[in-house]
Image (spheres, rainbow, N blue to C red):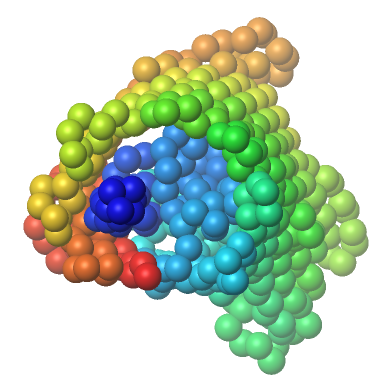
Length: 423
């Protein structure tokens, strides 16, 4: 009887905490660093999102998007996020679970990390977020629509899970000039954008390996005045290990945008270009319980990114490397039985870029040149209101965004809002 009471109390404490969380919580705590272009800002030729979706150094519902075996841990709930996205996860029999998530990253708010929604995007908000090269004009870019994520997992001695993400868009009848795609009865051009991504993960005695790949993904533009055929290939692999409050991890991601074929006056003149990025990360997170309902999370990592970019004539952008050492500190506390408060701070102890050329149009390799960047310095706050099994998570900002130092009350005070129900 005593054991049953202890188990019941333990489960109650878990349900009362924010162990089941949403993108609002990740927005406050932070995740992996965002890599920049040579000018020091996130650009169309770069990875505009984190190394992997979710957090490597603490537990969160969104980690299921890179290791789908977590569908066995966080199941039987439904969630709706600001930006009109959401989904549900449900157990199936005793040892299996499945989930469906819709419109992830396609919302208009895009407040998370100020990246236009790419932080959680399974596909493309726009073609320029997918490849470094655009069409003839910006209006030729067509975003993928209605992304869908599917999960299935099981516990058959070990926990395992599979995840597939799909998004697609097609526009026929673009006119000859390629300056608008609104008049679908004009011209014979066609714009298509398709995205497929797959992940597999497991949990074995504290070890949590995962692997993922983006395949069969392509943007095509067959306007009479131009031909563009560009692809996206991604591969990521990594693992976490849990030991008491410690979570060390290692991750690798390969990102490749490739292919551009253009024709002038109907004469094909194909020149192939690509952006290639190889990212390596290692780090450790630690969760300290300082009192009942109060946790302090710490993290330090080391990330290295190597980029080769042949989409531009600017030599400075073509070959460079980045070194980032992020430090995160966060606190999460149950102020009452129905209200949890959290805050997170992120600081790049090191953020350095090394270039193969010293000038923007250098004709020859003059040796490595180092450029120290300010990196990320950020503080955010958020909360969770609990109405039984119904939780309302929020991130607190000003103007509907976390960017800058403004925190206050206005029409868009809640930069992120999420509603979830667990049963």
